[in-house]
Image (cartoon, rainbow, N blue to C red):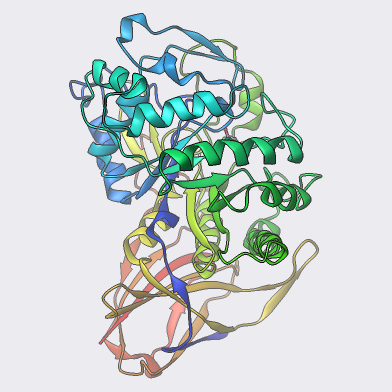
Length: 499
Ligand code: AHR
């Protein structure tokens, strides 16, 4: 099969906000306890931070990490997580039916972000709590001193303010599973008043209002419309969440889920723009796709968990090679919407539906899905280019006509490199890819990295951490107009072009 990607130097989507390569740490399962934090582990430092995990996080170059939830945050008392560790209460976490010992809390997380070379995206509890607790937390984190909450922070040994800029106004409050579920009217009012208080403290804070928990929620997209009609003036982003699954073991449909993600983004953008128009507003509301991933492998195991333990093995999806392909197409979709999707967090970072896995007391390793995120974070910063893909389609009952290839194109920040990320969805056809780059004909193919495995269900694990790994394919520097590059059936490809 043959395909062509057409780019034009003058036609761009927009700058890629690096926060599109963000991630998420929730107090859930072994994300914190046994994941990023494991005192006594041979790789842990004096603070209990696992250095092997930190190295993998730095390798991913994660620009922002959402914290501390998720569903967890909706009944969380942040005050429990600060101050002398011995005096912190153990609490029942109603969201995940686990025990939260509060040994690792807010200030520990902020210390961890420094080592991880990342920034915090802090979520507020607007499930069981409200304006007062949210304002107190922001003052505790960001005010230098000489006020009740900032002095409390200083008394906890943290002299300098954390300076957290990005705040989530709650989590999934449309969901019946959420502690403190709200109607869109209730939430819209609360989000507006909380945002107002926070922006009185600091107008430069960036605030994310809660959007629908997924595209199939009964209130979508009326939820977004109503919420934004209340809080449009005070917020900057609306959150978008979606997880993808292959429960029916139907590969052609699973691989086409990016088409659903694309439609979801278009619907949310249209709703934001509708409210903006109604308000005669000047600012666009951007999207924070702050939970996305494949999630289904662990569903059955989670039903058998014993409740009320610390750090249970919960949501521990072991990802296959096909999941990595889907993740590649989802990243492409986010990049193709770089003009409106400014933040995206793969959910989550370690152990819990995550690219990084650990064993308590044992090693840390990269899951299959680590690789497309790694490549995108490394080569996907710059300007997202408009691309026209000429490639045959297959018919799918759920998604209609699905192109055999899925692609995105990024011009690097220094303008010297154009990178194509391409997934070949075909199970049996090599695709001969050509490129026509108008105004960039001088570029030559200088690199082709491929992630491919003969077994679509192949996984990485502690014994075989390098079962699914990318490999460099030999390339001769050839001008783009003369390149015909073979893309293996079922593969994720990173093609780099330079002068
Ligand atoms: O990421 C796991 C969970 O998925 C989060 O806690 C919640 O926000 C979503 O439903």
